[in-house]
Length: 331
Image (tube, rainbow, N blue to C red; front, side, top):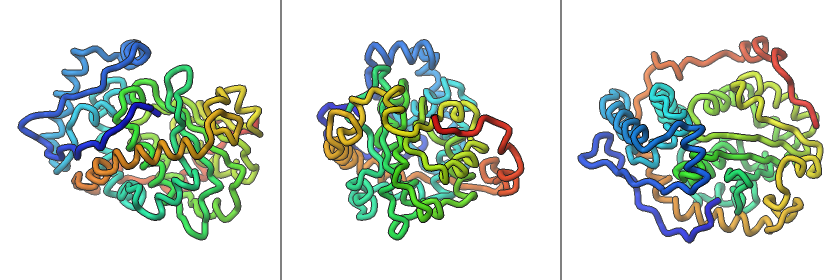
């Protein structure tokens, strides 16, 4: 996570067709410049042209009533989709729709909310202080901190959105992407009981179609065998690119073969204590608090004929692609 001293951010304009657009963007370092040029096909001319095209599309979209149009926000989608206008506009449309269809997952992203603050303090999910050698932001999660007597899958989803929304506007994150690490050692049957196949389907749909983040690697550590069945159901409904980036590890020593252990919390073999990582993340949440809450002011009209409203059935998950791909195994 960027370590520069941060100041409180202003609330972005939600007018879908403002008289003057916010074109301020972050300057890319040498690594991100190369990534943007070589892998995202970004040039100043393409960036300017794509922003203008996406803004014109937003202004004319009948279902979009209010939406951010600043460059940092729109570059989330353009960079994630490597400047394919069709794919970027579809992702933005689905992102807005998901916020309406699943408000209990994607809205009220407030660090001052008691339940959210408790999950942050417990270390359920947080970005690590330092990026990896390839400039990627590393996010660490401890699934065992989600008490099934107190929290639901909705709380877990909101926590993921809370982390994401503090990072999605960062140019280095947009260009280099994320690495996610989850400690599953504390998972219980009660926690697994919180997750339904409907939840898996809906979350997978969001990951596949609406999440403006470039997930480069996804590591599960101390994966209990009872969690593998749910994990393999999930694999059935996520796209092949992400599926191939998921790895399971028996212990931290196995993870250290893939991830520089100095990056992870001290309690797991790293340098900085868990409390330091969490404190830095809480500071970032307070900086981004007003812009994140303002996202709830975006307005999008969801209609039945839109593609993202057509949901697959549980039977399609159970009898469809399960078994047609490499299932997760413990390394």
